[in-house]
Amino acid sequence: MTKMNMLQAINNALDTAMAEDERVLCFGEDVGVFGGVFRATSNLQQKYGKARCFNTPLVEQGIIGFANGLAAQGSVPVAEIQFADYIFPAFDQIVNESAKFRYRSGNLFDVGGLTIRAPYGGGIAGGLYHSQSPEAYFAHTPGLKIVVPRNPHQAKGLLLAAIHDPNPTLFFEPKRLYRASVGEVPDEDYRLPLGEAEVTKEGTDVTILGWGAQMEVIDQAVERAEKDGISCEVIDLRTILPWDVETVANSVFKTGRLVVTHEAPLTGGFAGEIAATIQERCFLYLESPIARVTGMDTPFPLVLEKEHLPNHLKVYEAIRASVEF
Image (cartoon, rainbow, N blue to C red; front, side, top):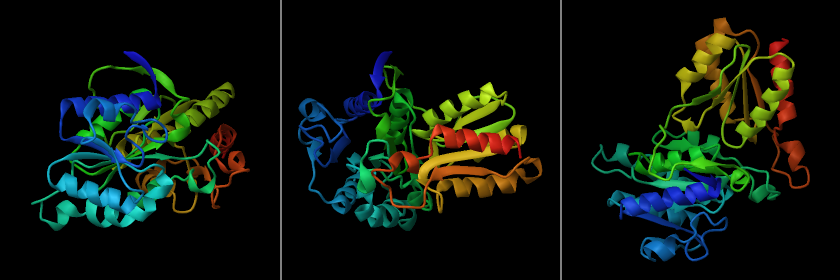
C-alpha cells in the first residue's frame, strides 16, 4: 500500500495498465511531456514513448473519432478530454458511434476497449466552462458505462476495471478531489466491480445516495444528522450507467426514506431517474417523498459557486426534512 492522492492513483492506474498490455494507449490535449493540465499523465510518455502516450490537436470530436478507430482495430485507447465541459463537440462520436458500434454491426465489431477520462464538477473556481457535471446527458445512451470515483483507492480500482471492461466507458474524475483526497492505495493491479454501488455506512432511518465529490459532502451532513439522533445509511453509487438499482432499493426498503445529491442541475439530473425508479420499486415502503439536493438550474456561476453547489448544510436540511415529514 502506498499513500496517494487521487491524481497519483489515476496516474498509477494508467502506468499499471500500460505496463501490463502494450495495446493500452493514452492520448489527449497536452498529455505528453506536460503530463496533462492536472498532471494525471505525468512521466507516461517518458516511460512508454511517444507512440503510446501522445498529444492530440485541440479537437475533441477528432480525439474520440480517432479513439473509436483504434478500439475497433484492437487497441485499448484511454482518451483524455481535458475538461468534461469540452466533451460536447465529441457528443456525436460518443453517442452515435462508441455506444452503437457493437449493436449496428451485429456484434461483428466493437469499441469495447475504449475508456474516456474527463475531469468534471466544480469546486475549483473554474466558472461556467470548467465546472459542469454532464453525466446525465450520457446516462440516456444505451451501450455506454459511466463511472465516478470518490477517493484514490476507488479511482485506481475503478479506472483499471474500466480499461479492462469490454464496453466503452466514460470515467468522470471529480477534479476538486484530485489533490484534496488522500488515502492508502494498493501498489498492484486490482479492479473494483462496475455496476455495483457500495454501502459505505449502514443505518436505519434514511438512505443518502451520491457519487464522486458529493460523498465527502454527504459524510459531513451525516455527522451533523447523527448528533440529532438520526441513523443514516450512506451509499456511493460509483457507476451511473448501469446503476445498481437493487442495492439502493434494498436500502430504502429498510429505511423508508431516500435523499439523492449531485452537483449537476436539478432538472434532467440523474437523481430524477433514481427517484422515479425507487418510487416504482419501493412506493409502499416510503415514509416521505424522495428528496433531491442538487446544483441550481442556472449556468455554473463563478462568484456564487458556493451558493450554487449542494453543500453539507443543504444535504443535512434534506435529511432532517425527510425524517420529520
